[in-house]
Image (cartoon, rainbow over all chains, first blue to last red; front, side, top):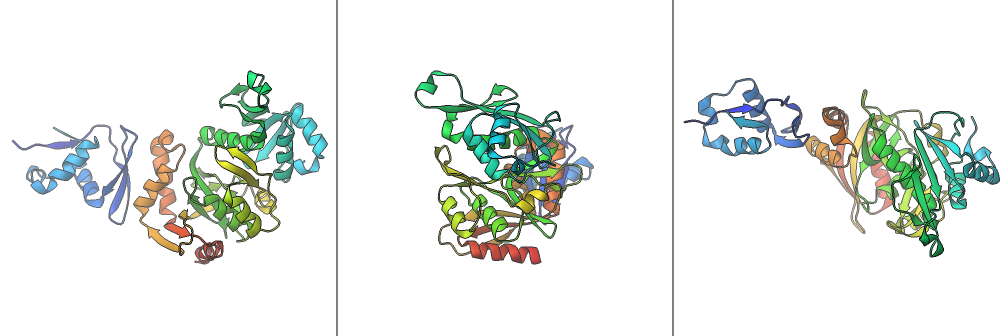
Length: 77
Length: 304
């Protein structure tokens, strides 16, 4: 069964991007994270329901999804 | 308005030892009491241009420097700093009374003035735009700051605390004496002839310290805010060639956040204020060893 992901409730994804890097404020931990532009795009797509389950299952995304989960920005659902 | 310099040394000493003075430094008023002569000497020398606010007016901070009545007073005289009548810090040797006032006032602002985002950074201004110099101790920040305001034609906004107004991103000046340590004291004495400097105090936790009087013109313009222009992370490396390297904005943000006193406390509001600051500023890593070269670099920035 494919693992599905969602944004952790309460995250507003307050962020600012420059060039190919973003800083993001984690509403729940109060931490600030430095993310690649791609990771930020993935977060926004998850928020907007704009990612197919097949895409999320792609091995290429496993590392970035694990990283985002480790930062408590996303969770399995 | 009455300034500290309009009082004789004797009158200043009498007032400080009595009801105290209300010292205006930029947006803040400090009620200060002390019968310790070196405190009056330091205030008289370095704060001569600063206004004395009305005795019955509001004060943001209430400080008193006094000699504690403990056993140590028989072994080595000490000074203690009272904030709102309470002692928050360990007493220091009496000789360190004036530096303790400076450190105590920095603590007051950095821990209490949370309507600003506060960066541990020197900040100077030319043509309305500010250069922020965040750096850990030992990086040559204060030496560079003293040279830039003493000889480079920059206005001193602050040597230690960059105050970013949350609602509009303006940088609010807090011009106060520049703190120099160890070898920097002689460097600035030579590089900025005529600079007014307090007596060096030895054996502090920071080594030997002395404070340089802020330029009178900077004190006179303490109500005039500046717009952010540059964020320069300075590093003094002996004998190094001058090097400046543009810093990516996201990296600038993360490094700045690490130099803030109250970034975490302000939460999302602090994030947005800092992001706006980074949006408005060009960031650099900057290595220097020769002050003339460093001043030329900053001139180039201001001319751009």
